[in-house]
Length: 175
Ligand SMILES: C[S@@+](CC[C@H](N)C(=O)[O-])C[C@H]1O[C@@H](n2cnc3c(N)ncnc32)[C@H](O)[C@@H]1O
Image 1 (tube, protein in one colour):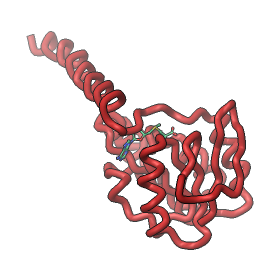
Image 2 (cartoon, rainbow, N blue to C red):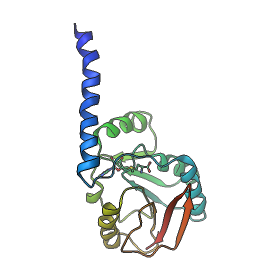
Image 3 (cartoon, protein in one colour):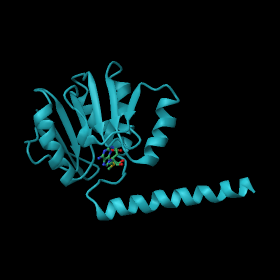
């Protein structure tokens, strides 16, 4: 009997997550989970590799693929992802915390994080979010901080470079 309840529980929990994520995607400004593909990440890292960062931050990191590949190129860098979707938090906890990875994924709202220490920030979010984060980055980040945003420009900043990778624009900024 308990086994039967467990079998029923899995699709019910999945359905609850699905309803929440559909609601957030269509009825709020929250960016949904869509991952950056590894070819794009490699092309971005190729552009960034000439200067080693000490602290890389990925607000809304999803499954932290950018941090994983960046960690191979910058073995000394501190790698911090920010993700507050409950399902991804669980996946990341299993993937990164239990495996003893050096990637730290924090379960926080990225609007409430302090970006002062970050000297490289990677974002793949949406337009309203980049406008809000732009204000925060301008207040908190120090001179020399590099910010990369896929698809969505930061309205407060002028990009140093714009690359087209797999038909999507990628904006490179230097504070
Ligand atoms: C478009 S996905 C990008 C995932 C990852 N950066 C990548 O490029 O593969 C955006 C992510 O931001 C997360 N997110 C949205 N709002 C957030 C918030 N306020 N705080 C933390 N994470 C958030 C979503 O759950 C989602 O995983």
